[in-house]
Amino acid sequence: MPSQIGFDDTEYELLREFDKIYLNMPKKKKDRIIVTVDELHKKIESSFDCKKCGNCCRRGKDILIDGRDINKLAKELKVTKDEFIEKYVKVDNGRSFLIVNGECGFLNEDNTCSVHDSKPNFCRKYPFLTPFTAYLFFFVDNNMDVKRLPVKFPLPCDALKNLIE
Image 1 (cartoon, rainbow, N blue to C red):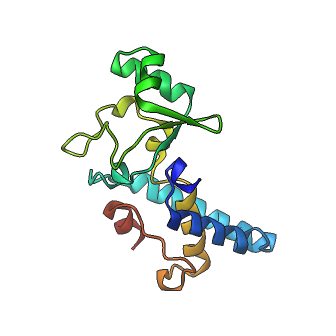
Image 2 (tube, rainbow, N blue to C red):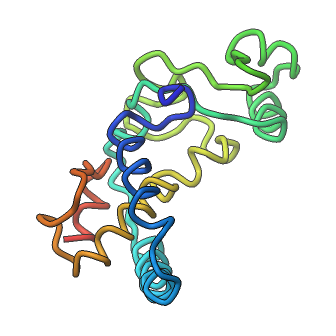
């Protein structure tokens, strides 16, 4: 299951560890961390300057998509919804996934996205998804000391690493 929605094993390990530590944390402490994480998250997201390294598109994981994503992408590619689904989508347990074999088929040679204006919501929000937010919780709870984090979380790109360090 982890490989199906774009998160790798390290990210799932981080989320499992996060659940163990933070689900039972006293409310006062958790609330204090949440406020700091929200502020940090907003600051990082607003300061994020994608370097177009393409790492996020070379993760080799199928991407969870929904009907809106399918409709936008089909329109962008000037194909019918059914043609798009037949060529690019697999369905597993009632959920739709954009098939990614090694690297995204929409990644250009210059590491830009050929369907940028219509790219799936998952791609649009990456790298600011749940594993990264969990990482920020650990980061804040350990007084911003990466060496004390319970799980080594490889940040997906240099642009994000530079903002955190």
